[in-house]
Amino acid sequence: MFANSDAEEELRGIFLDSDMDIAGDIQEHVLIRKDDEIIGGGMLAQTDDKVFHLLVFAVKESARKHGIGRLLIEELLRQPWQYCIDSSAVLEKNHKVTTVAKGQSAEFYKKVGFVPCDFSDLAQPFHEQCLECPELDDCNPVAMVYAA
Ligand SMILES: CC(C)(COP(=O)(O)OP(=O)(O)OC[C@H]1O[C@@H](n2cnc3c(N)ncnc32)[C@H](O)[C@@H]1OP(=O)(O)O)[C@@H](O)C(=O)NCCC(=O)NCCS
Image (cartoon, rainbow, N blue to C red; front, side, top):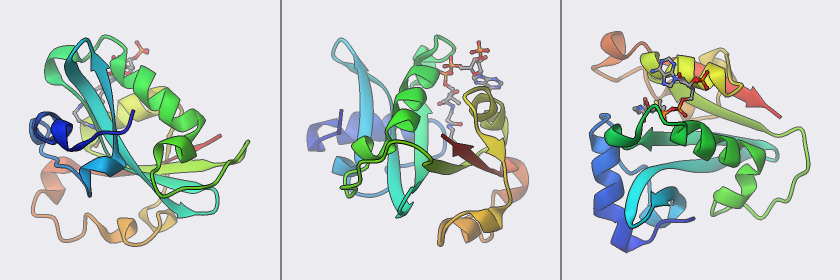
């Protein structure tokens, strides 16, 4: 489901624990709940007719390694236009989703079907997003693409 302003603090906490933050308006993010607790979320933007970019994605630390990340991302990958607030597209196939994995999470993305690509394959401004980052060396970011 899409997040609303009531979810902002809780979702931001999950991202901050992984050195990320809310990536735009809170309403642009999707989240997954278990009972009353938010256990993960992310945000997609549409960058071309059939291309979407996953800006942030995280599962709450205490909920990791139980398949929640796979559950949420597989849902986002199946029909990203449904989880991208600005998208009116209804596509059936041949869509792509790009992202930049922080080093350790690249293995997770590979498990769900992403493959590494060149940063130049990402839409602007994402293909330059890491160049100025002071944590570049520690983060070891990997550009990745999923093709449906
Ligand atoms: C990466 C992340 C989203 C994975 O969420 P999760 O709920 O723990 O993942 P799942 O339990 O659904 O794991 C799915 C598969 O990926 C594998 N996997 C998950 N994290 C992994 C890691 N860090 N290294 C290697 N494999 C990993 C799991 O072993 C599992 O494999 P399997 O299906 O063969 O058993 C979570 O660890 C996280 O939020 N990390 C911090 C934020 C982050 O790095 N986000 C990515 C954007 S840069």
